[in-house]
Length: 115
Length: 109
Image 1 (cartoon, one colour):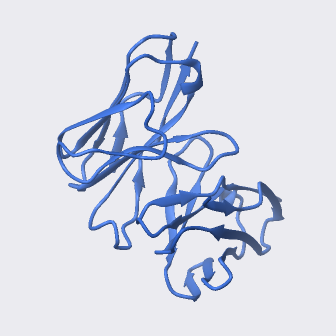
Image 2 (cartoon, helix red, strand yellow):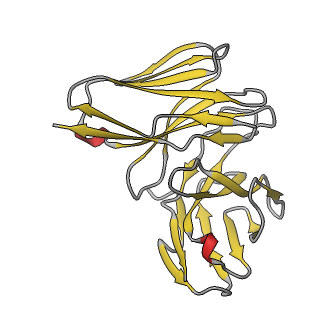
Image 3 (cartoon, rainbow over the protein chains, first blue to last red):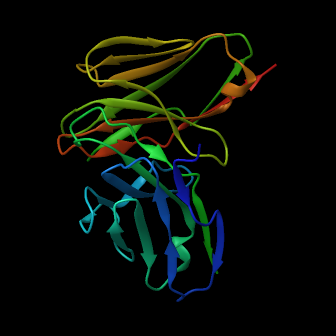
């Protein structure tokens, strides 16, 4: 019954390492999103994609990049991890036009610690 | 700037009713969402309001007043499993979601 799968639940990386967070959805959704969730803050959008090979910056894209080579897969890349990127990362997907009542389906999250 | 305000934490008793408020100031409005998030789990969709009024779905109801920039989530007949964080999110004029920090609801027996 799993619909949005994030490859790693917990990761520990060192400063400067390259980090890949993978997200796969099996609902044939057009739209995919990467958020980070930090205590005391609302979800913050990092990047999103409305179609294959398409990507748009969210509110906090600095230090991140993304890749969407296939419809079902949306990867988040930290080129050179820093301690301030220690966070919970949530992937989500949705179908339909952004103006519709499209509901987000979230993955269980990837908790990244950068030492 | 854009802002969503919710109480940080609330406590209620099993079997009781609790109302979680959400006020917002955003550039435009294209709908308000409530999500539930149990500790360590993914947020899951609860409700969507785009017009003023009350939407009822079982034990959960959500209310919206666009003129007041206000919504609430009403949970009736509270159960222990309702212990979770409740996230309010507003879609702005660019159809981007602005999220509140969430309200942690603690249910006591």
